[in-house]
Image 1 (cartoon, rainbow, N blue to C red):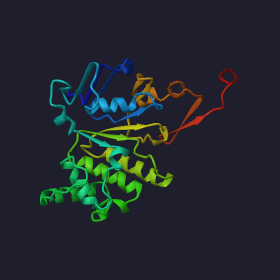
Image 2: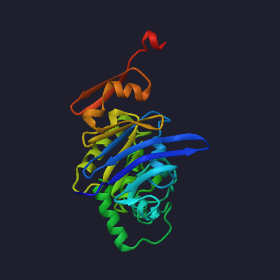
Image 3: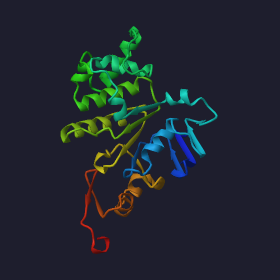
Length: 267
């Protein structure tokens, strides 16, 4: 039996008397790609912070790739998790070429100032081809489009050969065309042999590509539902998660969500 990618048991995080995460259980098996859905304040960001070792649990256990938080060097284990988020995007130097941005992922360094080794350059060039951005090699960060920046950040994360790749609202700020092109790229990335386990954090079911097999829905710091996409993506569950009357639609393996007018009982 293959080792679990991730296992969270009875996770509780409490700060100053406020419960942030409450009794969270979650397990990710090899070959699965997950989407985390939930409204603002549902606990998505706190869960990511716990996974990456930046938010210490009050109780419970987190195991990643067979190593347990508190029993292993989480700084080393964190290197197995690639993270693409707006916070990383905002820290990049405008004059840094895309090749250096990708290569800096090996050293977990923002605004890379060292001298790249030939082996690092070669690997970064290979990754740029993998993320379909070889033509951006010499282009500085400040001249990249939002969609190109997101791809380059994925390349930067892949430089460290992560086992898990977390995409934290990666489509924020993208126009509709750029968003769709980026999502199609994520679909191709997830289908590749030896792809890292993908975890997409989003508010929008429209961003859930067919490659994603499982869904975790959060509400008020708790897991509302978790499991295979077909069993979790239900209108009633989503309406509860987002505290609104919603209607879930599906066409050609893509989902949509419509907000319905409030009923008289909800006025």
